[in-house]
Length: 189
Image (cartoon, rainbow, N blue to C red; front, side, top):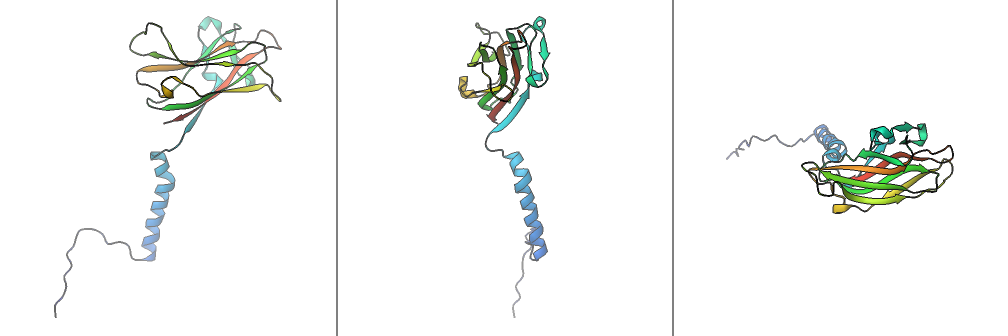
């Protein structure tokens, strides 16, 4: 009678008990639920930026933090600006500005970039430009302006510095105010 001899392959045999299968199953569930989404992000990511990241374009214009209403320049009608900090290669889908503008004048949303290595003949280059209209909206007069059109299809290029300017902020009097509350950036990593 001949005996069959099995060669060892050096591999562990698959678990045969019920307990062994459930441990492998739990490990796979954890990997799928926790690790895979971190490594393979699909879809868009959202970043919120508070008004405390916005500063005057010129330091002598100063700024005022007006609690919940946001930030504005001390000298009426001036610019607040903030960096747009996204990784190279990210694609911006939308930028939504949250603001207050109870005056009759528009505020301007200007998204700019400048080359890090040298000055372009025109200085900064516009990535997007949009007006932010005045208005009142119950209950607290906060408005939102969504911008969805950008130079280079919204892709963040290497060796550029990106920043956003909001022009014509300020508080000429108690009735009229133009503040920056913050912004929401939706992008693809």
